[in-house]
Each structure stands twice: as structure tokens, then as C-alpha cells.
Length: 334
Ligand code: AFP
Image (cartoon, rainbow, N blue to C red; front, side, top):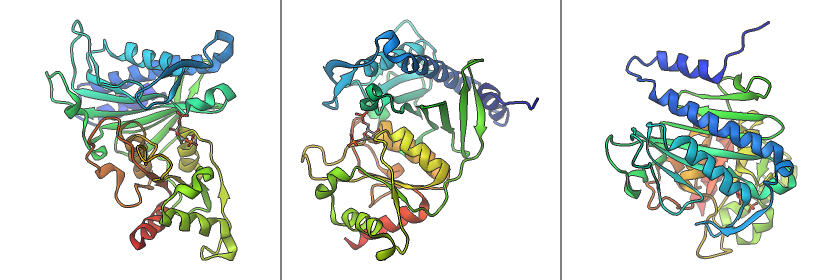
């Protein structure tokens, strides 16, 4: 029988390579893993335990929350607020940063998360996920919003868990990207995809075409080229996929390449972009770049953006290197 490496073994082996590592970071990741296993269990049980459907409340983003948005947010908070590894947390679902209760010690990391991304898919039994990002924090402080407003390039770790046909965790600490599949029988994530690399070229794009009339000219032009295929300047035929669940779209791109666009649009002047910088774009950008791809607004590298608020939204164009470069060129040309 071949020896399978668990996520715990993988993390401890990585930690041994860093002589100054205290083990805190490994413990923190283990707590995140526990929270995600609990979420995986709930998502999998679904209607059997009455967790599907709307909670009929609105989050800070102005979106109607699903019951599972609230339940999964509580799981993340309650699994992580007592550990002593975090100085604070911020959730896509909550207006202000989440404080560590006074009775618990505070640590040197900040955790930002979207507890259930793609939750509009949950009632139709499609893939959803948890996305997280870890930043450093000065020790011994009570962090305020300003402490969270770090560039994506400063992330210590980013990851997501995809609750699909298999539950998978994709992780980077800045040394490549690895993916682990949850073995439900033994309750452990097992290393199944080492050092993932995104093919540099692609002929697959992902975009919500129903917003086409609201896009800027460079995106209009790029998608027009894709759709014209062999008959246009691209000289190849494209395929289109749109799962409307960022975790699933990004996982597909990590495995077989492709490009994902959620560009600026003029639908709602108060929300020119949809995806959130700190809960979606930054963690996905770190993962995509570590796998050899690119992540841009079309005009600048996502990881270089200095955030001005924790719920800031940005246009996102990510995936296969050559394709993202081409879209960036279109933006330069106007
Ligand atoms: P929900 O969490 O509200 O389902 O939003 C998911 C998401 O943020 C991201 O995961 C998708 O890529 C994108 O929005 C889908 O957007 P559209 O609903 O416009 O297709």
C-alpha cells in the first residue's frame, strides 16, 4: 500500500524546513481545517438537516443571506476565536472586523474569510467553497480596520476549500500550490495534487455573458475575439464555462487552464465591480500566481492594490498567463 501524506504531515514537514517556526502557523491551519471539515459535513447533509434556503437577512454586501452563510460564518468564528493564534478576523458576511473575546489570548495573525462563497448555488446542489487569507499582525495589539488593509502581496497564506463531488483544500504559503482531497472515511485531507501549474495558454474562458452590454470596450473586444474563434484574430475556437462559484471556476483553471473574468461594469454605478478584494481576489490571486498564472484588474496586478476598505470590490481577470497578458494589452490600448 502506498503511503499517503496527510495535510497535517505536509504542514509539519514544511514547518521543519523553517528553523525559526514556532508551530503556531501549523496549529492555526489545523483549526481552519477543522472548521472546513464541519462546513463540508453540513453542506453534504443539506436538506436532510434543514440547512438549505434563505435566512431572509441581508449582509454588508447588500446580498440576501442563505441560512448556510450565517451558520458557516459562526463555525469559522467559533472554531478560531479561542485558539490564541489570531489577533483578529474579518468575514465577508460581517460589517466590522471580528474581535477575539477578552478571555482568550491574542496571536500574531489576522484571518480574512468568505465562509461560503457561491452560496447562491447551494440550493441547486452545485459546488460552493470557503476562501481564506492569512496576514501578519503586530503582536499584542487589538487590531483595527487599518491593520487589515494590507496588500495581497503581503499574505502569509491563502487557500480555499471546494465542496464539490469531493471536498478539496487548495493551499499556498508562497512556495507553490498543493491540493488535498478529504478522505471522508478517515476524516483527513490527503495530498493529491502536488505543485499545481496552470498551462500558459488556453482556449477556455469564463464570464457571466448576461452582463455583456455593461462591460468596458477592452473586455467587449476580447470576448468578441473568443466568440469569433477561428474566424477572428485569435485563430482558435474557444469553449465557455461559467459555474458562478469562484472556487469551482478557479479550481478548473488550476487543473486545466483557462481565464476567468469578472470585469468592471456599469450595471449599478455604486457597485462597478462585484468581487471582494480581501475575501476573494487577493487569496485567489496569490494562489493563481503561485501556480504560474496571472491575476489582474486589467490595469494592475491585484496583489499590488493597497486596500482602502475591508469590503472593497475590484474587477478580477485571472488564469493562464498568456491569455491574461493579452487582456491586459487590450486594456492598455483602451
Ligand atoms: P454568491 O456567493 O452570492 O453566490 O456570489 C458568488 C460570487 O461572488 C463568485 O463566487 C462568483 O464567481 C460570482 O459571484 C458569480 O456572479 P454572478 O451571480 O454574477 O454570476
